[in-house]
Image (tube, rainbow, N blue to C red; front, side):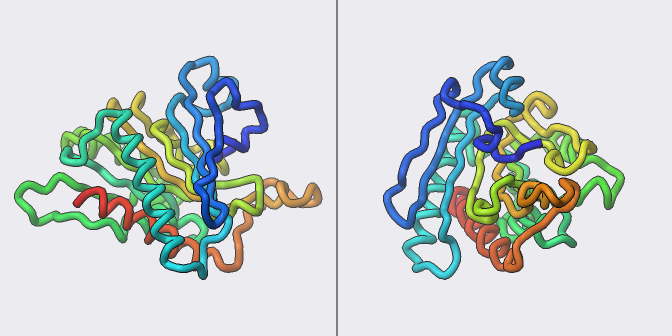
Length: 253
């Protein structure tokens, strides 16, 4: 299973795939729209709008770089909210997917820790949770989210997750956004259940960053079952989780 839609190995021209150069620090943004069941089956991804922000230089750059990335992320999130008629004044559930005990899989929980909510406010409309992984709890994240959506009359779900890539150069350098939701652990196992509008009956917007790669994608001499990450993955997870959380917090003000 491939997490990044532009790594499916197929021609995405029929989905309107295009890449725009942002103009500085080699930052680009690609987009496509899978608008039919036939295309979804062909490419192996659910229907929806997809954006992929690529920034090969992340750490150690000036504040201007951070601001550019933040503006780009906020812009794409606004588009996805608008496409799905989601108002930021509605009741929103933020979900951090992944294993907090494994650094390369902790992006989702790190974002959740940094998103601001007002639980003691009388008109609180923001909720957040990190349900952990099926291997640790025996419970599919979908089941927990479904119950919360029903119990709190949630209007939309926003998911954060660490992804897998087949290109070592994209580790910690790409951010994928979509309104197709996600399937936890889809790149690594078959235990996850899809979390999307079809299964929850509310819009599901997903934000993910690749921090993992199969050893088999680096060399045919290694097993696909061996999952690797970079030595400085902790630093990148901290930086990118802060970046994404800052974007969300600013949008919610």
